[in-house]
Structure formats: structure tokens, C-alpha cells
Image (cartoon, rainbow, N blue to C red):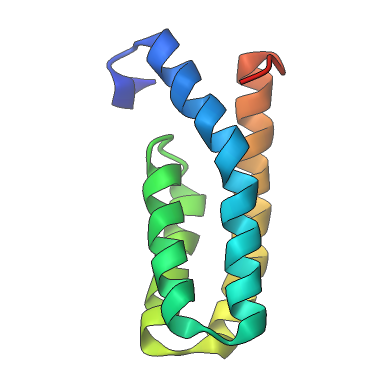
Length: 106
């Protein structure tokens, strides 16, 4: 909430967008990893990093940053391990956002 100056309405709007887009972003990351596309993986991770940064989700942010670095360096082996942790962290964030919004439609 601090990142939006305590504006609950703005927070709910941003959270709703992430609830809609976050799973798609994770799916795209997983597809890029399966395809062995390190460049796409780095770009997708950067985008996700920006998204989770909106919520001060430190662990998810750190994993997205690590994945971005792995993608940029072409380290797909490390990326595979990072993606597993990132999925857990992002799913936890999504669960928290759903709880905060009371599972209202976004």
C-alpha cells in the first residue's frame, strides 16, 4: 500500500491487473524456458520483476531478478531452478492479493 501512497482504490486496481496478468506472465516464462529461449526468458522475467515490485514482494522480486540475470547470461540450467521458486513465490503473492481483495472480480 505504501507504494501507492495508501490509495486503496489504486492498489485494488493494480492488484486486479496483476491477478489477471500474473498467471499469464508465469506461463510465458515457463514456455520460454521449455523452448530454451534465454533472451525471451530474460525479457519476460524483467517484466514480471516490475510487476511484483509494485507489491513489495521481496522474494518474488529477487527470484524474478535472478531469472532475468540467468536469461541474459544464457544460463538455462540455473533458470530452471529459479523458475520453480519463482512460481511458488508468485502464486503466494496471488493468493495474498485474492485474500486482500476478498476474491472480488477484478
